[in-house]
Image (cartoon, rainbow, N blue to C red; front, side, top):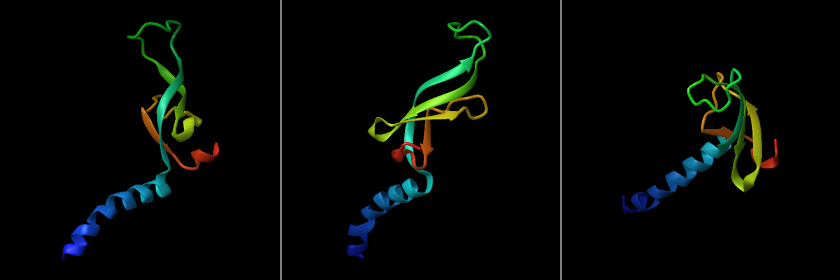
Length: 84
């Protein structure tokens, strides 16, 4: 039982690696493009986002279309480490 407790910490790195293989690497929002109804600097106007640019490991960037006219702050991209 003590050996199982000592090896229990290995589950977290294994789960992280499995998530990486399944879903890809995490990327954070860097910039975006949107339709603004002619009032770009008004924070109260409704914006319709068209594309989002994300930065991930190694400063590689991925530009993707917006999801439901919104840009999530963090997305997972598979194969993004190779510039896909």
